[in-house]
Length: 355
Ligand SMILES: *Cc1c(COP(=O)(O)O)cnc(C)c1O
Image 1 (cartoon, rainbow, N blue to C red):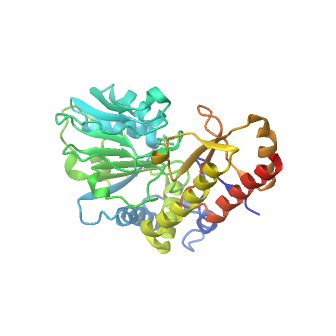
Image 2 (cartoon, rainbow, N blue to C red):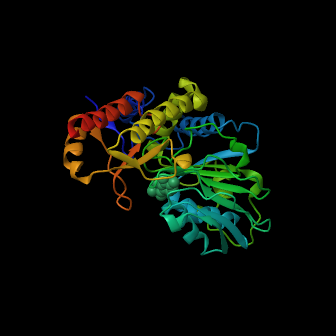
Image 3 (cartoon, rainbow, N blue to C red):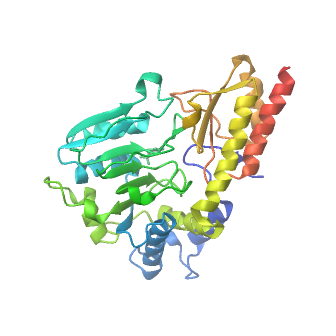
């Protein structure tokens, strides 16, 4: 039986997606060739790319609003640099909410001045800063919608006239937002969309072309847009699997449908963390992530017992990030509610055992 997979990334994908993906590796499109051995310029793969790009725009509700999607390589980490290369002329504003924001800031500083408008570093990134001001003379504001490592999530976004860039790697397609508030969204596939190896970039074309520097071709969004995301050989397999996952999500009812399930999963687990005296959460209640729930045992001597119970229940990937410790339950779109119920059952059994 398949394990209950709470891995933070790479992570769970829908079982039917894995099934279809494995079939395409052997015989794609009934052409008696593998998806992995055909040209990316062949009609069947060009269709995959077009379908993946348009599904992303459709699911985010951005059709007809001037946005285009790209599937590039280099991970979300490459986007830390690439967004600055293309949009940072002199000065940009960043909200520092964790390790990933910190890394984005480090790259942006190579290309211009960075104003850190807010930071929760002083308290170990356990909350989302609020009430910060975004200067009007910056090229853009950059934020991280969900902090995969610490388990916090931005529940609202600032009102500002400057372009907004958001790293949505770990919560894209998980909840309804007005995505048209953002001028550039990027997300590594391996958290909520597909396998590692490709990164989705959703960009409003009119924010480009405003910096003075020369941009290397591979880092230039305009070059990739002009080649329909095929400037160089794209990551064919990760893009195909991402397309299948987006189709799966569309058939399920899109973001409104998955958001309901995600809210149920998060409510089930957080209610237990708050109720059960053996567990405590790490972060400010109002900022808790619906994707990555971080928590710890209140009594470390139960660690071995708890972890052997987790193994016995078929639970995988619950260890916290090495920089935080404790536990992290990642509840991405493909994780069924039943898996969270199994985890909650183990937490309750531990309580019965301990008292
Ligand atoms: C995982 C993650 C990244 C890094 O992604 P890579 O694809 O490994 O570069 C960046 N930002 C967030 C929010 C993440 O969760």
